[in-house]
Image (cartoon, rainbow, N blue to C red; front, side, top):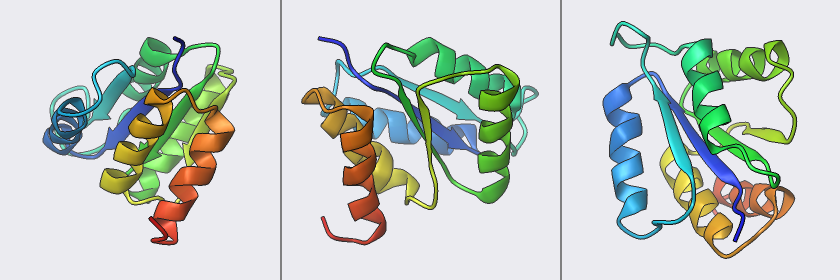
Length: 128
């Protein structure tokens, strides 16, 4: 089965890796990648790391990318635009932990990128 890929973008590599560990306790098959921290291991985000993460989980069904803070969003948008990536949704304003988890669960049951986006919007509204 083809899945929507999930990308976790955080200023902290430890936070991103910890969230991946949490997801992997339940969801094993969905491609999930992290883009945490900068290239030199500092706090921050990297357009290149985000691009690599998106590319590593890209499928015909696309990718959902979730982030922790506004500058991560900016770098994600630049990575998508600069590399002319298609079928990528950057989930704006979604709580990172809950949103990433729900995105992985929804992807694991075969939902489309649009259906997953709708489900994680409910996380934002705390309707789950």
